[in-house]
Image (cartoon, rainbow, N blue to C red; front, side, top):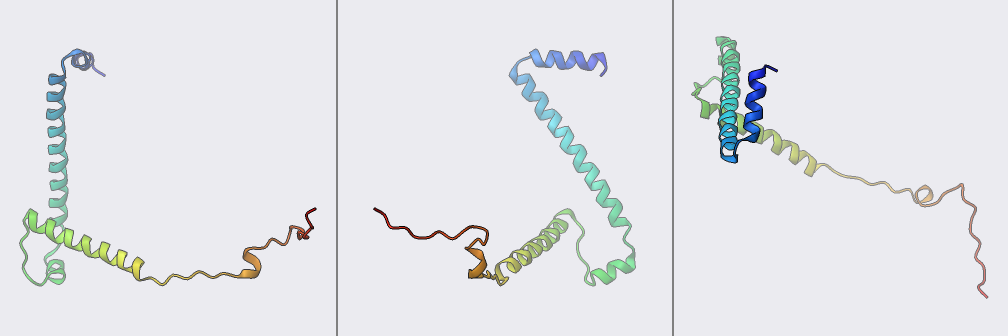
Length: 118
């Protein structure tokens, strides 16, 4: 780690809480911005790779391609998949098979004979 960065961190550790919070907020905002821009670039590359024939086959009607419309369509698909998964779990028939001969008796133990209490 460069010496200047070490000095900055040491100085920040000894500084007041207000300064630490300010650097935390600024650092978080910068990190979130970088992540969002990388994510948008990734989506932009993937959307451009779809050919025109694939677009017409997948979606015959013309749809808006702005951010909120994409988020709405994606969340609707996710909601449908989760609802199907939960519905399958609820509607699935459940069975319990009980074999009374084997379940509650152990063949290895000697039988207990009753004795009279005196």
